[in-house]
Image (cartoon, rainbow, N blue to C red; front, side, top):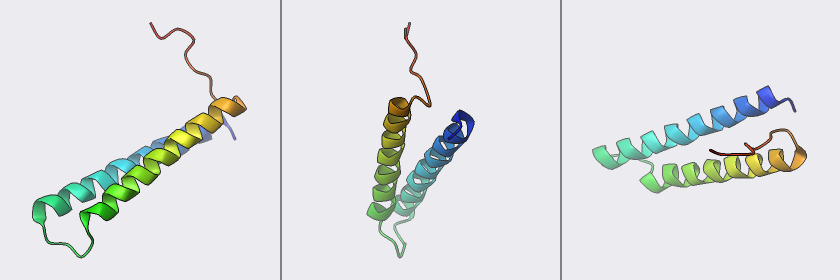
Length: 71
């Protein structure tokens, strides 16, 4: 997997996380929905965990490298 494709997948997953967070917000504000707010929050947690797992796998496989000095 190329680093550019991997980064694109990560960005798309983060956009899905933001979308689900926004959907949960609108369900919370309006209060009238067929789907409970917990469905969207649960999806947000699932996709966030998937992003973390993908980052750990990419670090382990050498697809991405961490910053050696953070300051």
